[in-house]
Length: 337
Image 1 (cartoon, helix red, strand yellow):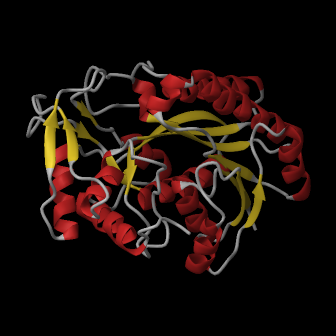
Image 2 (image 1 turned 180 degrees about the horizontal axis):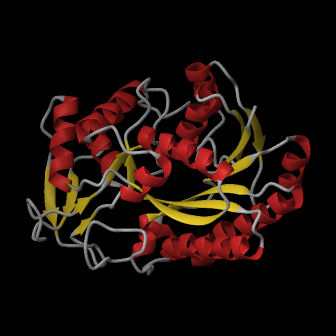
């Protein structure tokens, strides 16, 4: 059986991917320091799949801990999610982000190299495109970052491209996600952000359940369908399936490549809000605020390469995403505990 190490595997995207991997016949080993998640996620994965994945509470800054994992398991490939991920926070504590997301990742790549494990799927982001001059965004567009979080993603891409150039045995797929939302259809796995959410749908969910009073909509004078910003929202289960397709591809091909994971469709803030209203069955209050500095009008993916190389494309629409998010919110008022 092919064994996949999933770093950050109890987090939002990592947990969905771990469950999907198990259901696809892979053996899964999870590494997580539980900084932004908890061990109860493992029980939820077991309920969904019938399998309790092997788990190591370990930080990627811990070189000895990483070595132990590779010594004790025959790992065939790694999916690397572990890392800090808040744009605003990265601007406040950039050194912490560079230490964790760059130094920690280098530790992982060195441990992989030492163990002879040279197949990797890396969790990158559409933030590496900065403010694109046109849409849809293709993988060959120029890269440019506007915050330390995005810079750590782009630096990892550069590091891994150099690793592949130096050693033809390496196989790396760099997956640039757009905006993951939604939750597992069972209601057992979903997004549980710490504090007030930074992202749109978790914020709407808190308005819907009464935790927050109203949604702040940052600008309504963009050149879009209704004046609000447009983004490419992708169901987290579609994203998980994309990682399974990526692992299969990486195990059979060498070198580095870059692939967008999105739906190829853009939804405005108000379109997402109205889809969520349909899901929860009530009108949700919002207020129009001034534009935020750095926000762009429209951002969505060209997904042709993902379909061509991986045979993958997103299946779920915005109504599905909001329905599953609300289902998780209702079933888990206190988060995953």
